[in-house]
Amino acid sequence: MAVPPPRSDDKQALRRVLREARRRFVASLDPHAYQAALAAIDTRLSPLLRRAGPIAGYVALRGEADPLPFLMRAWHAGRDVALPHIAERGTERDMVFARWSPATMLTPGHAGIPQPDADDVIQPAIVLAPLVGFDRGGARLGQGGGFYDRWFAAHPAAMRIGIAWSVQELPSLACDAWDVPLHAIVTEQEWIEPR
Image (tube, rainbow, N blue to C red; front, side, top):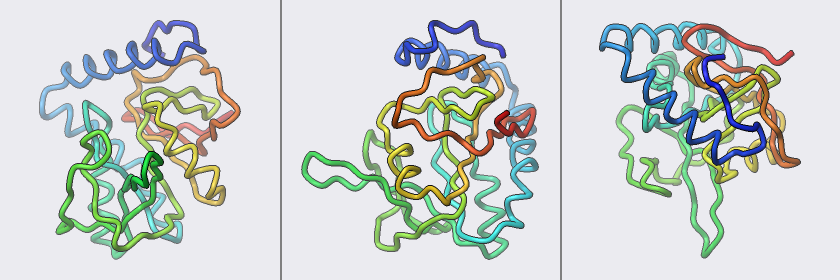
């Protein structure tokens, strides 16, 4: 645990501290070290290719650990790969996963995040989720929109894997009733399964 955290129930303060820790960590890496860190994450994700079903990832932004090397490898291995698409219906927003390939055109969606069109929605068996923070109990701190928690609650059979840098680990996170725990967390240093 590299971050001296604020109270674990002050999620906005935690997000600020963890985003800054993430920014500093990424800024500290030279290009070779950054590529080595991504390669370490990719290697740790490799066993997921032995599991059946589509794999969903995300577009990494603002220093998030990037699952793209693994998604590319999965796609080249013939796996169905998807990225999130936030669908807006009036004032409601829902997340679905849309099929992706290296040739897929991405357009800015919710909060400017690049996303594929929702022409071909698929149900992933494995979801790689971005994290702002995590603990070893499988608790996940996201951006605060609740998109992943709602999707996870509606699709409990999907394997939930958080992707983060090791500096984003906290000793513990206070969970709300709607928070859905992760099955594992992958960092550049290790594969963590909740205790």
